[in-house]
Amino acid sequence: MALTGLPLLVLAIAAALAAFGLTIRYWPRGGRWRILTRTTGVLVCEALVLFTAGLVVNRALDNLFPSWTTLLHQDSAPPPAALAAPRSRLDAWLHTRAAQGAREGLVVDWTPPAARSWSLSAIPVLAVPPDYFTATAARFPVVVVVTPDGVPPPIDPPAIVVVLRTDRLDPTFLTRTLPAALGADLRVAPHGWGVVGVGADAAAGLDALDRDSARYWSAVAVADAADRLPDAVFAPRDLAGGQAALTIAGGSGGALPATGRVQVVGPVPERLPAALRWVYAHLPAPLAAPLPTGPATPPLPVPAASR
Image (cartoon, rainbow, N blue to C red):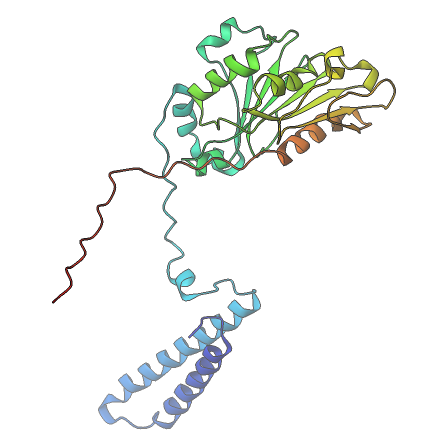
């Protein structure tokens, strides 16, 4: 019988009324067992009244306890999610903060050993999504933000976001150096990445689409106005199937890029969030772990037909 059902409530009321009636009827009886029978009757009546009142209150509070299991096992917490074994120094550090990361994600400075040789103006910043700490066997796509100015990392992203601050980006950095370093530190997917290039680095994502079409699927060029975009943005490009490009500018003046669509976003603070939303919409789902493989199961023997 369901805890929140009307039949249980009606049965509890009927049982309480019956207990009251029996207690009153047998109150003067019982002989030498009179004290015991009276005490038992009063306790049964009180228990049934409290149980009935609890059912009424539970229904009034929009089924605070929707089932018997919820009521009887409210002190037992669900087992914690199994965490993947740390694969690197960064993964081990994230492993120790899985409880916090699963709620709101984590934003951390990223300092791999090879970063000393990178031509960056500041330490790269990683925004790790909450799902990274719960889907512990999945590999996540990456969104790279390349900007000459410091920008705050996004909050609660659906993918791993890397913010790179640089004035001059090596052409092979996004296609070789960065994927190798990220793959050594985090569970990243091999494809479905996106790039947002801002200002002087607006063409970085478009170049990545050309150089590594298997890894990079979307790119956004962001600038104050179309006539302030780098010349490389206007170069015609032959995008592969499944790739997409967008240019976000603060005005429509000047020539338009030859590749992708153009979107005008007036307020400066809204341009990067708009670019990230567009890239998020083009991301694939996290890549699940491959199914375990093993020796093939031999076929069952077929019994010989009886003669």
